[in-house]
Length: 360
Image (cartoon, rainbow, N blue to C red; front, side, top):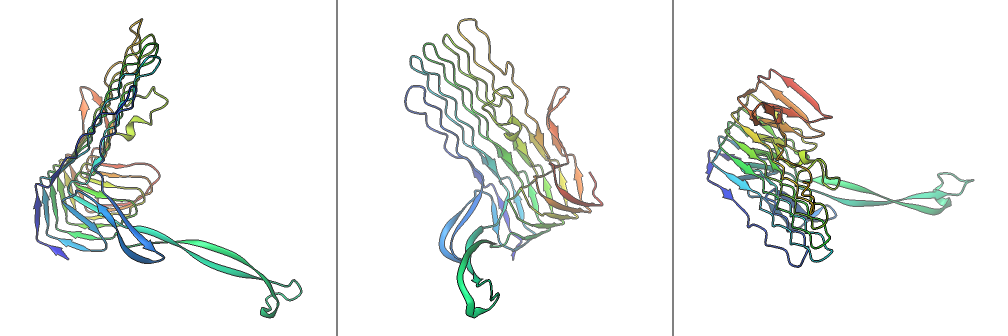
């Protein structure tokens, strides 16, 4: 049991990426600042090695009880990427690196999963003497994977998480192409996830009478495309037009107050989640072709939507919310353009929910 402590001003920003080496080289991705748990097992026995990577103010792995704790004024930031190098003759410019991810400034809830193989054999009997142990003529050999975990079902009671921030790293610019070559494309930004509370894959935490307020996830910027030289320019980072880039909406801001990862089973009872903000990423712009001076896509900076400022639940979640208040949570929008989904709560596809006495 952990009770009655205050953790504040836990802030971590990684080093930015160095520049690449060589003409036309791709930029180097920014360092991720997302927690991760790993343990080395032999069969079902812990070998004593492994690690938990987390810069959260409080990291919880196992079925612990945490009561009357305050977590506030904490932040994590994804690393900035480096830009690509200009290409040599007949060599395209290097693409910009991608920005680093950031998440879990306040509380990280994780579990350690591993597996071993259980081997067994099945006897083959003589066809005239089925199931007679005296007439076993051979064996079929089988194995199955046995998955086990350390436990990811902690209980939090009367805890306060306030003013925690997760900021994704920016993608870097693509470089100019060499003679007769196209420009490099800008890098994508990182993701920003769960500034207040980050519930990792497969965990089942319970929150009772907890308060999560004034937390913020901030997406990064995509890099700009480089110019072509007797060829086309590169795409801007976070472009919907570039077939080689993933969906830009992946690289945005999710769950400023609480982020619940794939397959989690969180329970919220009599909690208040209020005044949290997700601020989505912004695309880069495309480079220009030479000659012709025609710009590649995007031709302006696009605002990428963000999701679930108060609470975001990813695919496969089973979420129970009872008697909770969601107040004044907001996804940012610019001018008259909404750029977010689920200011209070976002349930993102294919999930099972039990909502009782929820006030948004």
